[in-house]
Image (cartoon, rainbow, N blue to C red; front, top):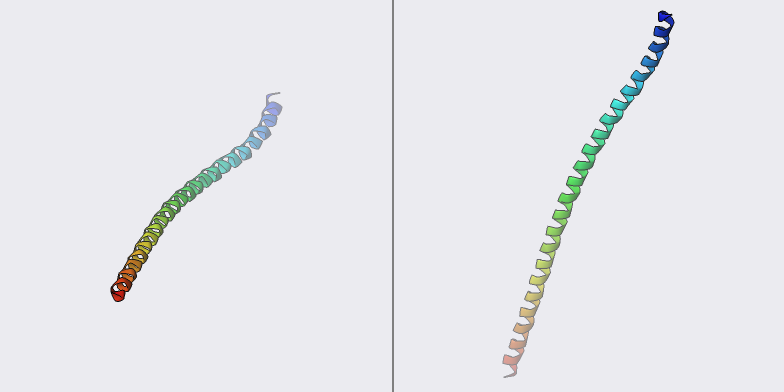
Length: 85
C-alpha cells in the first residue's frame, strides 16, 4: 500500500516543480521589467530636466533678443532725432 501512494505522490510533486520553475522565471522577468521601467523613468526625468533647462535658455535668448531690439529702436530714434536737428 505504501508503494502505490508513494508513486501517486511523485507525479504530483513532479508537476509542482515546473510550476515553481516558471514562477521563478516570471519573478525574474518581473524584476528585469521593473529594472527597465526604473531606468526608463530615470531617463524620462533627465530628459524632462534637460527640456526645462532648454526652455529656460530659450526664454533668456528671447528676452535678450527683445532687449537688443529695444536698444536698436532707441538708437534709431535718437539717430533720427539728431538728424532732424
